[in-house]
Image 1 (tube, rainbow, N blue to C red):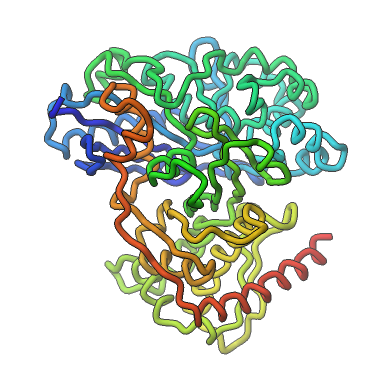
Image 2: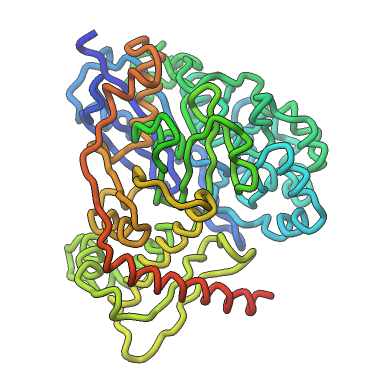
Length: 498
């Protein structure tokens, strides 16, 4: 089996990626492709299903070509994808509606109604997870109220990862980490809970959920002839069930117990930790099944993340950069050159949703004529991390752990890593592999192939810490003063929205 290689396929909110790994977790090759998001109405964020499927096939073909490997040397494939969102297919397997991305907020007003009439609390008592507008638990009731004919055409209701796996294998299935992201799944009983469907008045949707709930590292099917022709991979290739992307990043980081926090900064800000008991999750916002049997994942998450920076860069900052320059590297250089104590600007990163005030939108406060574009940029960086600190405080009311493993798009930047360490006051660890969602998926593929017996053995061989960033205590003190001002800005924004 010395010629064994494993594919991790990652369908994120921003891009679709394919990475090929050897059994030691070393990246052999990779490819990425962005699929445009369509905003067809207020709060609508959608993708074309055939465009996304074509992108998955394209990145697999490209990664395989770049690797120089023969297709037969790929032993197994697995995948991950963003939590939430919604995919609905008909009996023929074709989507009856565009793919809904997890940043979709069309159902915000319905979410507010659920919070006010007690529905959210009823669901929380079953799942230990509050409803949010970009997931099945709110989107399906929204469709029933606003587009009942579309919901009526749907025969299968899926997450994005499970949809792509269906296109690869022809089999409908899910696994616990993604199933709990729907907020329709009982984390302890490991079933789609009829009581939740009744509470949301969507009883007819229960039969449309996947009936097969597999382990993440279990073979969920094999590559069809059609998918093999489109991807260049061999027909019959085993495809493991896979993971929700934050779970994949946690596994790819080598986190197998509750000693480390997991932090992801991508399309969403996600922080969480593994725990053995659901009781430890009570009072938290999101609780899900872990990839380890008998473990759960307590999570705080929101779209108050790097998407806010993307918007600012695309709309404004890219125009200030020299032609041909890497705009994000330029941003990092400009921010790292600034003294955090030199600016009192505050940015609330709520362009795509808030983690503090329902229905709030982004805001830049304290802006004066002497402020520069670089200082606005620094405020955006800081606001994203301050929002993360709010999540961490909810997860760890007794104090943060000594270290966290960091993943997501911006984890490639030493500037972001150091900023996290300085703001949170803890050690930030990174790994050799920066595509941790894909690596976590490849770990599942290697176990499904029989290369490794379990997660512990696979992680020992495939995950490796490469960097540690230690907090600067002087900057930490400055940032905590700025964080106090950030909290006052939230209070001010609450007055506006109320």
